[in-house]
Length: 212
Image (spheres, rainbow, N blue to C red):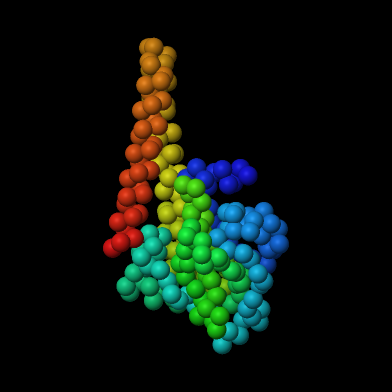
């Protein structure tokens, strides 16, 4: 519940899969029949543990119009598509859910989901159906993967960074309260207005970024 409250308030969450994941627990607690944080229901682990070259999967159908992936538009999209995955968690989305958006798939016969987003309240959740480490893939250490993680982090953490920057200015209030008698209501209203304006600017920026 605390995690849901964090995301609903504007936070960002990245969920990645792996061989230690209990998909039933994740489905019960985080998917909850499509009403939870997870954008997709986890079905089963799939892929080739032997890592035969012919079983390698790559990212396709990459939505570079999305703010988290627009950096890979044009030539860099091929670099992202060169990343190799051997195992992943099969997942299913509700195609009628307007809060869910598929950002990338694998080039297997089923065109399986690779990266999916759910809007949850004022925040967002990204589901990566392979692992963040090298357990299921050859991603870590590859330049496109490092850039991908950086872009996903910036996208998910935009509001968090805004809040941290705002919190850093609170130190300026110490001498104000030590040597004066400021109007607390006015200061609080100013901070709330600043945060709301900043969130509105971030939303406008992401909107126009998605259009271009």
